[in-house]
Amino acid sequence: MKTKEEIYDGALKIIIERGYDNAPISLIAKELKLSKGGLFHYFSSKEQMLYEIIKYNIEKDYFPIIRAAEKIQDPSERLRFFLRRYIQLLTKEPVAMVAVHEARRLNPEHLNELRKIWRELLDLISDAISELQDSDKAKNINKTFSAFSLIGMCSWLFYWFDYSRKESAEELGSTFEEIFFKGLLK
Image 1 (cartoon, rainbow, N blue to C red):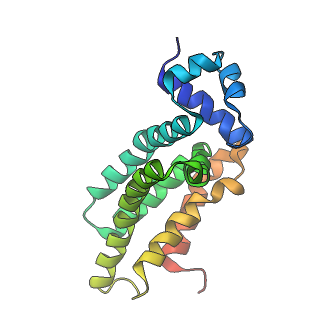
Image 2 (spheres, one colour; image 1 turned 60 degrees about the vertical axis):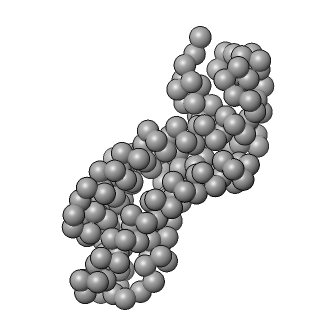
């Protein structure tokens, strides 16, 4: 018998490879060497499975980054820490693709629960930006848009990042950090 974590990981790989719409429950069950009934023993629906996969990965991968960043007093260091760790996570595998893009498939109750979690991330970043602005260390620009730009800059890299060149993740993090903190122009 497989554990839920094994099912989450296996189903996630299939969804990443094929997309949610092109990953029927029968294929997921077959790839996991389960019957459809066996898969439905764990989940009431494909939507429930997707929700649990996303939530599991957020709790496993994203919460530790957020919790560690929250402990950093200096807002600039908090942002830098988050950015570096988030890039490390996203360049490990394209899990964010499922969390960001396939979440729209979720029922409103599940989507709202995830939005609360995402809001926590947004608040972490926008609060740090606000602290920098209050101490006159950052430009007085819209902190929410700035936070969205940081999250978006990172969260969309799975469309173009070459996962066969994972060694470039550190350089990517440094580049994003430079762009976010100093801008592109001299």
